[in-house]
Every structure is written in structure tokens, then in C-alpha cells.
Image (tube, rainbow, N blue to C red):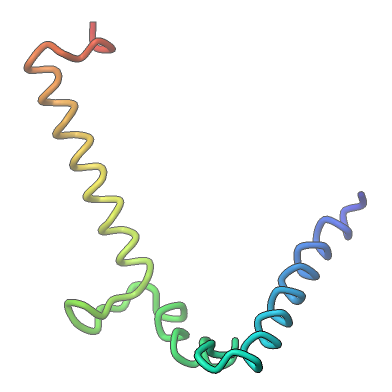
Length: 91
């Protein structure tokens, strides 16, 4: 496959998925169209670091907080395993 094919094929897939979504939204009453979904969610994508309130934050900020909590948990577990001597990889 050529270099252009590697770039075009994913775009074709995205367009086909969008068209299938649009067609499905015309037949299913509770399914919002791609345009309606974009209008409701664009603030989270265009302002990924914004904090508009405690429960209303951008997607990048939420991902950062989540990864930070995971890193803290791994660090805590590692320290605990080293202190108790149960860390088999630390020997």
C-alpha cells in the first residue's frame, strides 16, 4: 500500500462511520446525530484543560487527574511491598 493509501484509508473509514451514525440517528429517535453530539461536546474537546466547576472539567484535565491517581497508587504499593519484603522483583 502506498503512503497516500495509509493516509486516505483511515479517513474513508471515519467518513463511513459518520455516515452510518447519521443514517442510524434518522431512524432511532433517542440517538443524537453527529452534529448534535458535536454541539454538546465541543467545549470539552476545544478546551481540554478548562475547569468550569468541580464536576465540569475538560477531558485532558480528567485524564491527567486519573493518571496521577494511578501513579500515586503504584508508588504507594511499591513502597509498601519494599517495606514488607514481599517485593520479589526487588531482590
